[in-house]
Length: 307
Image (cartoon, rainbow, N blue to C red):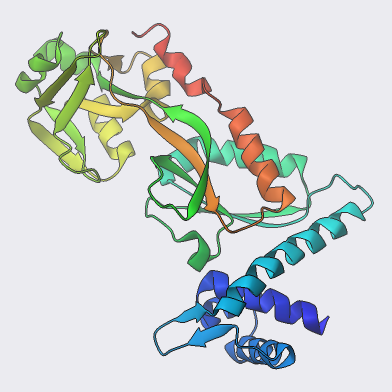
């Protein structure tokens, strides 16, 4: 048991990039973490970590040992699962980070279904629009919308995220309906402020030709739900993901504008650290999300009669 504790502690220190972070994840004192790592190094007769006042880093020997240690921990966990009364049962804790609106609307129900199917899994769900550091904060995976830019992460595609221009019938009755992207210069825009130059909207026509237009601003916000509410109240035209607006589109409370033109689609990914061997519960959860959403997610059914 002592060797296992040392091994697990060392891996958590590397993943958290600190003794204090590992202590929090393991729910032990920081002094216990430090002692276990020191005892491990003394037993092996080699330094695994370079320690400075500002950061920890792996030695060459530490990197080699870490990669093997991760594999051993995963294999041990899966071996234990195989010996349970139900060999197919998943067990253990799963930590997932996801964007707020997508998480509330779509990930929450998916989590409910997953936990019902796997009653021995404990799941921590962190809904926040900030970009979490998976390794340092101890997350098994994150759901991200956009494009993967961090080369240290591996991505699994879950679903396309389609963006559409929408307005309420009341707004269109007062201001008229734009027929081309150029018509938008005479309208009022509702903008997502977490993207650079959100007033510059880029459309593609049926021939693939690009059309760029700057739309006058009525409201800027860093939350899609706020912008959607403003559009529903007739304050302007919003570019919104269908996963957010689908109910309003289906109910006729919002109309999809500019048929014949499209906006670049984003992608919903499950991302996880490239160096980590995935436990069965993580792989199964990702598989469940991919099966639930897919290339034609249920929320895009609202577009069949709208465009």
